[in-house]
Image 1 (cartoon, rainbow, N blue to C red):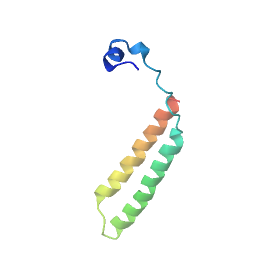
Image 2: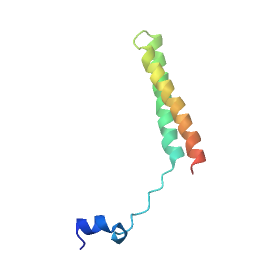
Image 3: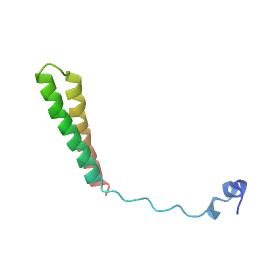
Length: 78
């Protein structure tokens, strides 16, 4: 078994890294956007009844927009 010093001096002697796992980003981002959409509906209902704040609506809207941008990024970097 090689020592740490040997591995640092000769990194080519290490075992190769395992391949990166493949994830379906469209499914992951879609679930996240869906959760933010449900949160947006709940936040709007709470805002209309006087129990919620505008900040919660803004956070959910921002999550949906960022999720959409993530979908665009995932499409370009398949």
